[in-house]
Length: 144
Image (cartoon, rainbow, N blue to C red; front, side, top):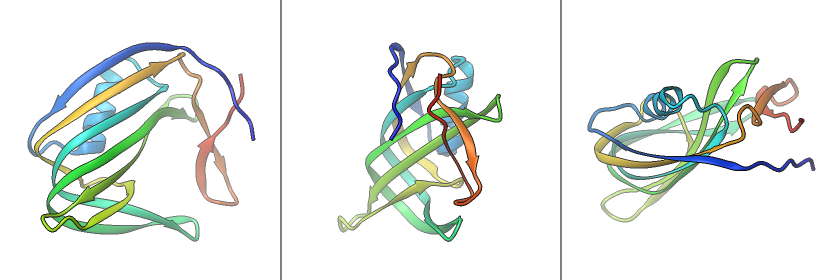
């Protein structure tokens, strides 16, 4: 295990609108506010969701039509290869019957009524990702 300590710098609040793509909109909030290290929380509704389940070095896509309630959403913002912004998010969504589904957020999640989003910035550039060839994933590289 490796760990580092950081300070909270800013908290950004945003509301997402109908038909906005979830990952793109999270990335846009981060870019507009010049944030490349942080963590986020979100709640709201989606028209459809595409979740990922990691297996054998890749994400298998699980598509669920809506409407869906985001029961829990969280993730982090980091950078890889020195400058590429990475949004890593997970959500648990529920349908009209209360059935819950969760996983890694993949492209294709469309906002329904709204998403309420909170982004907490931490010390600039502290969260970096490096390729772990064994797992074929860009994982946190915990270094100063």
